[in-house]
Length: 443
Ligand SMILES: [Zn+2]
Image 1 (tube, rainbow, N blue to C red):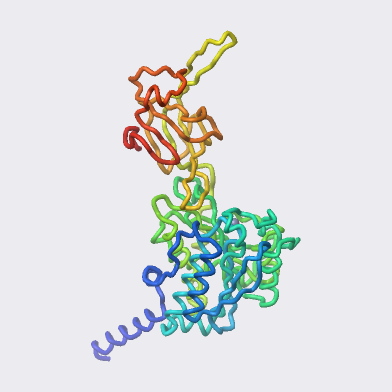
Image 2: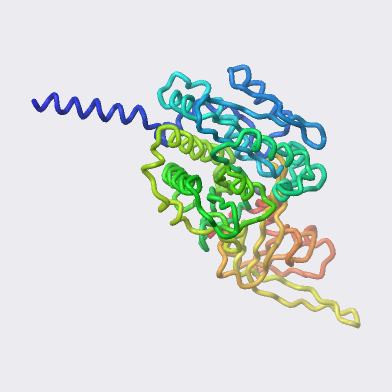
């Protein structure tokens, strides 16, 4: 064969392969140019979801009301494709875990808009995808984990005391999907292993029993997670974890798997300096990769290795803020009314509470002492400063509202209205510096 023909044959073969392969980078571009969600996920209310659903319907996506919450908010199901392999996804059964809801909306929007593309045609002809974004709209509107009855829907798979759990079970049993995706958010300070790296995304291939009995679907799900890990790893290296592998008898993921729909759990965490929309994009790439590799069979080129080598989720290694080596004056009043001041030297660790993005999140002091084994997302070197509580004494459980004074100043720590009488050099409030930013050096 002449060389030139050979070369062009290789090019043709390569381009066929490229056409079939929807790369993570291309999925990222599609999300950038085609995402329809434009509200930070934590700010999305049920009415915003309804508007998103209307938009999807307008572009031709099949969307229907399939049930109602305890407070009569509509619960929707989206559908795409006409293939034999049935994929079911649900998000936000915990009301304050919103990231994947936006990713699902964007995914259906992008699939619908790209129906002329080969890889989407293949998904359409191979899979039927159904998704319930925001299973717990009452919890979502209050931004709380539980539903309006105060029930954790994810502990209600057997009792079925909540309308949302009954609906979820019914949607599964009437359709018997081949694979399920259970989409949640985890604590922002969860780490990938006992490190300082936040677990931005964690996966778990969920067993259907405590004995960890495997199945063909379970093994396929491990390969799918490997494909997803490979796709998002370049964007968030070291920030992917494996969720605790413990059977929860009353949870939906475990029971879906037991009932014949092997489940993949995806937990979105957080990433310092990255917006919630970045994590929507990571969900989009991961789930898009799973669908694409199910449709074109490329998941079979994976083994369980990428999944099994993920570090386990860890907690307790990371805090939002650590102020190192601060001198904390403690005022003591003895029996005859004399005040004495003792200096405690130590690290102050504070964490931010989970809030919608539109609300300021207070920092709460969680630990004081030797925090040398703990990392801070933000760390400050406070060895040249006194630190005192602005409204409450510095101790665990109190507000992380802190006044900082340079050590060469003479301060009467017993003074009433300390802040007014002795203006501090820096003030840390609601997770940021409201005075003297940069005075206490960042580490
Ligand atoms: Zn959850």
